[in-house]
Figure 1 (tube, rainbow, N blue to C red):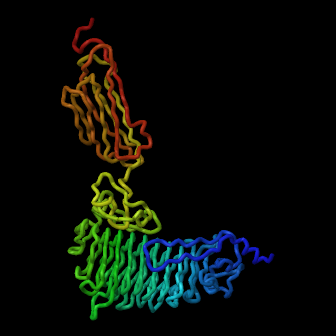
Figure 2: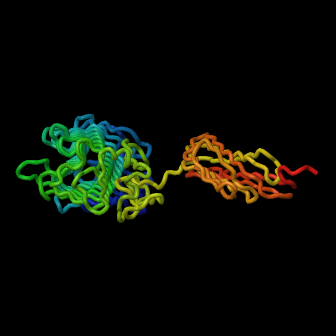
Length: 560
């Protein structure tokens, strides 16, 4: 059997390309490359084994660059990288022009650096009747540039592109779309990805992150630091026409003359520019020069918003209410006269970072950066997310905080779902001593009850319950921290000591004085137990008891 025939015989199931039609808010999973080593092109699989660009023009087992694999691949091909290959492709021969239906999987290990000389990818126009879907997975695309549209990626008519688990950073498109440009009749899905620090800097252009004339879907992604200066439109996203769906995503720190976060349609002009329909669900839009802005007037450019935070933006949050914005409810905003549906909550600007979310965009888990919600803040359990099972990070939602009343289904507003009350880890310990080992009826006893936090974290809401023996009556309790409740003097019962928060290594003492009630040969036992809002690694030391002997006689009686 010939060598190529033998390799083909080893293929159990040919690998095909996963495709998707239109822009949806669901992930499309691309099949992974086979783990066995195959000859280039067998089963439609091409494996890049060199970071050089452009290469010698031939993709073979000895040497295959990304440019060579793209040129050699037929429709339906999968392009991957050898497992040991990681690093930077220094783009030296212009953009990659992709004419076919392909999948390119960088595995999160490959960066393409265009050094400001060209775009990274141009997905050229194809006839509408031809399947033209493409998947880019696990790539980082930096320093792209074009005087036209699409500083990193240009998607022309009839192309359908999904961008997954990728980073598009520091690119520039002078005529719009610093990161991505989407032509009319083209579609782009962005999933689990970051689009940051891109710019559309030409006068009158827009879409620092994305300029769309087609169909755009953004899911579980973050757009930050993008800009459209010089009278530009839409710092993060400019929907010039077509449709856009933004779900479980964060739009933060973007800037533009009009619509720092999102602009739908132009900011003005005659005739009214086309604009499109924008749906925003369970997303966080904050710290932009302005939040969401409708271009034109009336209902020409519908923007439909559900369960979203639009607050903490610098100039304005929502532009003019005449632009056709529709609330489906359960939003939290500083947008006056915009959101008036069931569950909507207006706040003032000062509350955004003191009562709603953290000001810093950071790694809170998951593949992309987010703004965490403040614990038990105004956005926790205040939303509604029907059909959602995870937040932007992939963490479960909804998660109910039992200390709060749910507005609807226990979901939080925005892209981030708080995972219930924060529980500290702290080893609380209680111990006690007594001033006498044996007593008679009528004697006074003083118990010294000590509560310690052995760490490692602060223990919130620490409470000590001291159960008095039925053989004593209460006299008084003294503490230096917190408050106490106790039985009336002369009665028995429980002394409760509310210490509040107890920092790591804190050591607090209560003195509890009682009178011995019983007589004869018996004992009395005092039991103290400490609790707090903590996960305690050593619950065995949370309780302590001490027993005192009672001897015959009565205080003040003569000895016999």
